[in-house]
Amino acid sequence: MTLRRRVTLMSALVVGATLVLASVTCYFVMRGELRGQIDDSLREQGHQVARIPPQRIDPTFPRRVPQPQRRTGASQAYVQFVSADGTVRRPPGSTEPRLPVTAATRAIARSSSTRHALQDTHADGAHLRMLTVGVPGRGAVQLARSLTSVDRALSRLRIVLVLLTVVGTAFAALLARILSRPVAAPTEHELAVSQGALADSLAAQRQLVADASHELRTPVTSVRTNAEMLRDASYVPDDERRLIAGEVVEQAEELTALIGDLIDLARGDVPDPAVEDVRLDALAYESVQRARRHAPGLDFRLDAEPCVVEGAPERLARAINNLLDNAAKHSPDGAAVEVTLRAGVLTARDHGPGIDPDDLPHVFDRFHRGANARGRPGSGLGLAIVRQVAEAHGGSVALEAAPGGGTLARLTLPAERVETVTA
Ligand SMILES: Nc1ncnc2c1ncn2[C@@H]1O[C@H](COP(=O)(O)OP(=O)(O)OP(=O)(O)O)[C@@H](O)[C@H]1O
Ligand SMILES: [Mg+2]
Image (cartoon, rainbow, N blue to C red; front, side, top):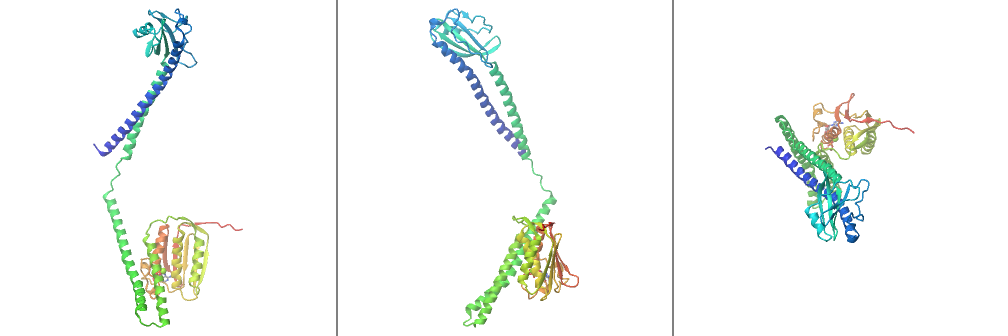
């Protein structure tokens, strides 16, 4: 038998058995409750009979015997008197069928005691619950109530419970069958693709770790050399000591920036949980302000139309900052840097030397630094981060030679134009 069949069968068995148990319990509790009410009312009338002095019971017919009450909706009531010699007397004008007189009834009638017995019986095809109470020295009184409505209610309950059990069990089996449906095994091609993607991702991670270790080694070595020099030199003139300490601080700052970049890159394509509607024009404005503070000798110009993009504000700001840092880094003193934002496309155009065409295809590679970057601070991670942020937001980034010299960086994001309200 297959595992799926076994799971289906087991689920159906467990649910079925539970439903049967619950139904049987429910049925007998209800049966006891309904029949109990009839027994209680018969016993109550039986007690009344037992309290009547025997001499006051008329042997022709005990008129004083309380008749079972006939309330609207109550079950049909029967009564008859059985004398000690077995003669049966019934209320005058009684149309109800005669109650059966058994040897046990006669024994109670003869017993001269107030013994009583409850039993199920039939009279003229009707199912009855009957109480026989002894009247000492006179005989016995038989009181009965019809069980027809109780039987009808119980038979309806039986149908409902059986249906519930059958439907519940079938439903459980169906559910188990659906849930245990075997997941389609991946095809060879799908397996190969996912293995290939895994191998690529592992290789990329290894490459990042190797490149990062290499890049980190240089500033760490410089910091160490400078620190050792300060420690070991017996005498270092004050201004030289300040120079070396200044270098250590600068290298430590570079290290901090590099580590920040590496952390950003190592996030890969993991989506940022703090995604919100970001006003791209506001971010561009803040980035330009920041760039002006960092490079006060340059002329940054901003022309941005209001637009909103769904994304992580810190990451988007980082991408714009990296583009503006590059423009600033390669601009001659006093030159202009024009920043525009139109229909989700942010451009940053500088008037620097531009990028060597041989370098252009590699500028987005991690740790790639062009020949024009030699002697300038940086680790070659800025554009790799911009690309990662752009792609994570469903956009792209490109660099090109600007007409008339310089570089034009273009960051495209799925932004939507917003109307600003003017007061
Ligand atoms: N505006 C630009 N003008 C000229 N060359 C540029 C410009 N932007 C980028 N490049 C070239 O692309 C290379 C890669 O840029 P990227 O921003 O990734 O690294 P970086 O600026 O050298 O270092 P980092 O950004 O990590 O501080 C640079 O080294 C540089 O050669
Ligand atoms: Mg850069």
